[in-house]
Length: 430
Image (cartoon, rainbow, N blue to C red):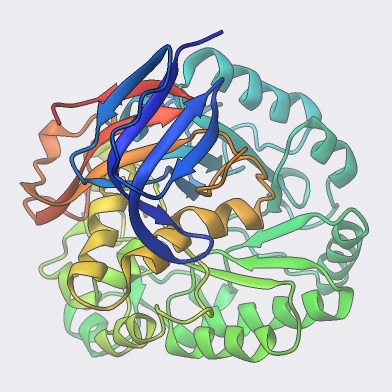
């Protein structure tokens, strides 16, 4: 039997109930054994007591949209590398994208991700499987078998399923298994585009990605999801029109959820500046009007999840002319601090923010034992100083790729301790 741990004298965040209070958490055998809403000195036999000095104690972050690299892209990212970056960044659970090489569309590949993560990762990995085989949009995958193997959701990532009949059949099949569809709205209207279509793209002479392309693709899938009663999550919406579509369908069905990339909440198309390829992202950085509208709705229930949209790229694929450079940026190590800037800016309460980073993604993915501050749940917890200032230096990142959108940015919020199933996997000086 492992020694009990008392995380004493902390400011606790209960994201499920959106509350914040002073107290202590008792951990026994890897689970939260008790939550004590006071700061009294406690004497518990055979227990290690850690004074949290009133720092924030919260469930660990659940990052819902991460490119893990393996299999096939180990030169860009690895499961072990992500784990090492995540534990120092407050992320305890990761849902990995299926668009690797080979694409995660077979039982053996889901099992590979699960097995490799158990061998190489301290954080928990949950594979998202492909919705159609090889992401060709022609034949659906074996959803039931993939769920049994450990898939937590189904997505064709950044590939559009053009055949509406295939899309409808896949959604119907998923509904029969109570499976979670996780889609990034993609339309061929965006084909050839490299940034948001606007006056800015015209001035830069770059082909644009019109914002209605996202909304058209989204509304098509929302309508089919409603018809088939499918659990549907719009992964990274980026426009005012898309969020209004989400609002409309959320009022009609309880099976619709949505997420936003932290990049689209913090940055806009003006950040691209003089063809800065690290800001070439999917979805693209939009107008300040779009970003502001997302921010204005952040406190509402229309945006369920904030994700890092971790999509690292090698230096050789980024140091190219803007049109030729790859989409994507690393995001694991900045998710918490960048998100906290929304709290520091007065746009959202801290418990509500943490709910979108912990409890909501856990609920959507049906990770029943993590993501909340409740007795009996796995002790996947983080302790952090929400005010600690730091400046991001790309060469200090743990991630293999250094193409961050926040280089040289002044950030606030540092992780002091990460606990996974009762084990302290990271600890800095408190």
